[in-house]
Length: 316
Image 1 (tube, rainbow, N blue to C red):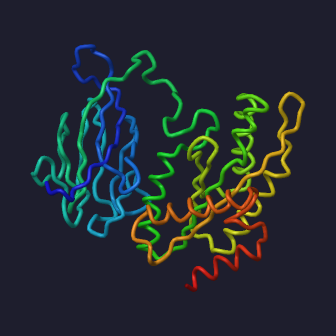
Image 2 (image 1 turned 180 degrees about the vertical axis):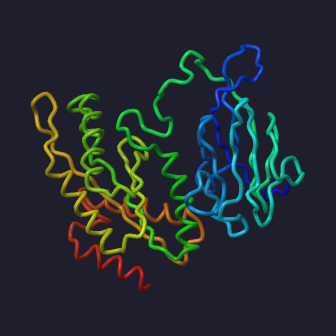
Image 3 (image 1 turned 90 degrees about the vertical axis):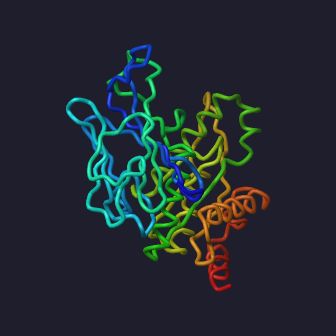
């Protein structure tokens, strides 16, 4: 394997046994880095296969032209063993250096999706065997708000960036934070802070479309990845979010707390070379909104100014 090869982590829950000393049910998994921003974690039960390929409908989407649209699949046999099968890919699937059509995976096996995407198969004992098979909280979700967490958003930004570049599609990212959040928790207590974050999540979720990826980025900062949405439409959406939060009644112990948010929005541009360029621009615009005195979008409250600002940047 070369230094350019990337590793991704993908966990597959098949409820098989791994033969560990504890004899606990095991979780089997494949390891592969989701790209520039994060390491992906995918779960698979015995009734579901894991699809790998370039097309966006795959469970593990690898936006690389050298990877076939539907390259390979990982599945669980009736006996509980894990296998990987090549789906007639152009460049092939390899296990421990050997080209395969279909092969059972064992602990420590390395899978190469040509040309340079490496997945490592491994077993890990479940920490609580008595909960195996029960409906558990989605590890990708934030426990307080129920939204996706930062890790999931970074994965989707990474995937969306390369797919939008390849398919010449519009891609926008919107980040916002609850203004003066530390002062809110200081004045009203941590329970009030939790209430505010939950309510903000609900209010903004009601405004976003079902296809938008909405997540709690960290603490009081949220992010939404918006596919196929034009610049002006994104600015209108940001303004709607700002006003929806501002005029929503946030009540704690019978007292209304006035809440506003500051937003930064940005768009995929031709000169951006990586997802980090995309994310950094939006975070910079969020900082601009914060320093402008809160309750702004990219430092402005005027929709006309925001749209003009975007147009000027695109023309530059």
